[in-house]
Length: 127
Image (cartoon, rainbow, N blue to C red; front, side, top):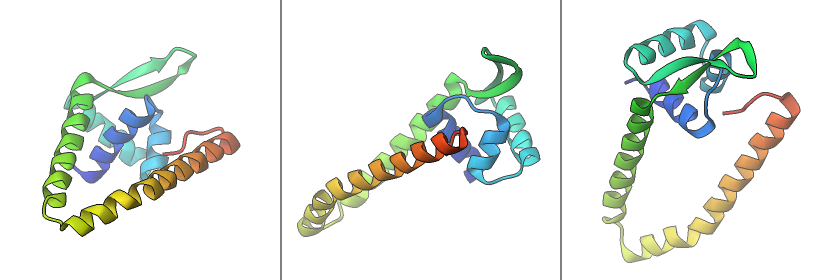
């Protein structure tokens, strides 16, 4: 699976159903490229297209259960990889990572706030 496909699935998992145009903007590809990518993922059973209940003219791309399962499996593989690598660190290095966790959490919160502000200004979802 391409990095763009995996990133698109992760975006859908994190943000919920999206328009193809939104997905293209978030992932930094053209709309035709995203349309082709969605078609391949749809044929693989990872996503499906559904009408938007609030606007019948809009089609949304949604994760299927298989797509959500794929995202969970990839995340779990990442967790296991980090667990293995952290196991190779010295005690001092592990302590340094633990000490950095509050700052990293704060950084993630700031990024989330920036995204929310951008969405409020543009009226569009931001990756």
